[in-house]
Length: 241
Image (cartoon, one colour):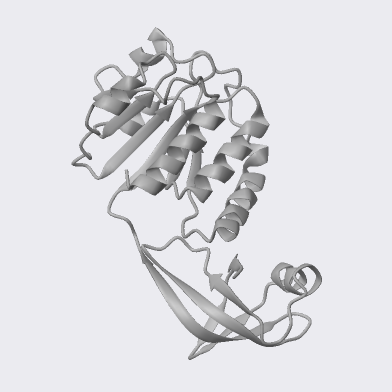
């Protein structure tokens, strides 16, 4: 059943939605009819989210009226999951990384220009497009969270005293297989840092001098930056890490 993130007005067991884009999509793309059901969720980032299963009872040129059939609640996870990614070598890869990590349920996605990064600046003109990609990814995957996407040149200040796990191409992947997983941080924050093309340099590691971190690899294959981010995002989501 399709999920839509949209503002609404609730009264008793009825929702009223005035969203012309949603109305157009239901009528022209999905060919929806009176009596069809979908899920609706507010895009507002709340600690406790609420999602409604609703039935179309009627519509006109500007409004849709729904009857609530059931509801779901989502409690904010105890652990907040952040991923820091070395800037990839093409801007379109940023969009793919954001889309896939949204589907994986990441809380925050940060891009950082490491020494080997080809792209070293933030493109503010693309931010509106990224927000649209995030919204559509949550709807498509029926996820709950709209992750925050940011850019930093000082990742150490963001990581601060939290636990940091670094994934680097040059590190022995057997370390991850044979050792116990790192303990969760007492600060309730856990960060993952994904390598750039070519791996991290000594200068990159100096950036995190004084920060507690563990270094691991992902298998014996050499993954691209975007592939490593997606693979690890999936592992986090499916293994409760």
